Length: 328
Image (cartoon, rainbow, N blue to C red; front, side, top):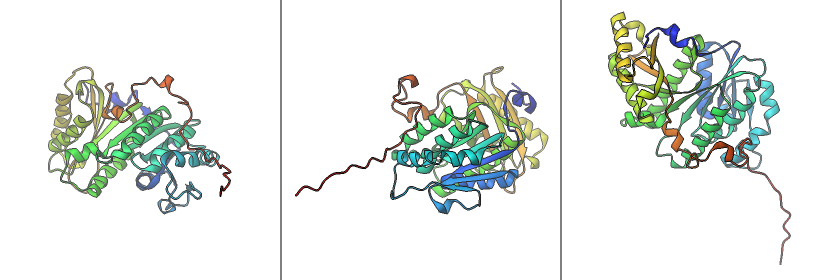
């Protein structure tokens, strides 16, 4: 194991400028705007709701006469804007796509945007997963996550349900405020370093008086998503407010994290600090070889991907007009 940042980042996927952050839907747009402001990069917003598009660089996905289109119908409308999306993402070395897959816009559009962006750029996706009580959204989010993973070089997953299970006293809005802030802060740090290829889990904590309590909260959230911490191959720990801590405390954080993951020689642990106006918080980004809870979101996940019908074609709902005569 190692607490050295350079060793864990040596084989990470680098973030190269020029960088574009794409926010999809309401939550994705808010996070993308905040992250782009923190990093100082361009931002593109995409949504079917014009109220989400609060900057000049945006694409409105119109749904025509459909007042409440399904995820699949909305995806077909987004596919119809492929040329405009392709033009908007050209010329960037790295594109970060932020979407809430619990929302209809995120689940519908994120696979389309990632697929187009990957044609010419390195794509890092941030996917927010639904709460457990949002039963009607779990399947669509699971399928969308599969599509996003296929069309991205790296995926970071924030599971709001795991955070809420670990902090049941919080309201839904309080949960969003904490997890969205964590995403913005981690994206700001990723910009100066890198991210593990494939998929990583982002776990965070509430504000705490000490770093070890905050780290335990992050680890508890991680256990909600993956059962075997021995399958974790690397962990990057970001300490918000770490500049206020003595070096001995920071060293204990790495040692404590190594104790959590146990498998000496197979798990690499590194740490970075960031400024914070509040108390101490920790964000843990881990990558593992084991399946996560999201694999169960799609009940058909046991079927090999090469047996899916039209797997390479994104789902859409055809708009077929039938001339039906009036019979009297």
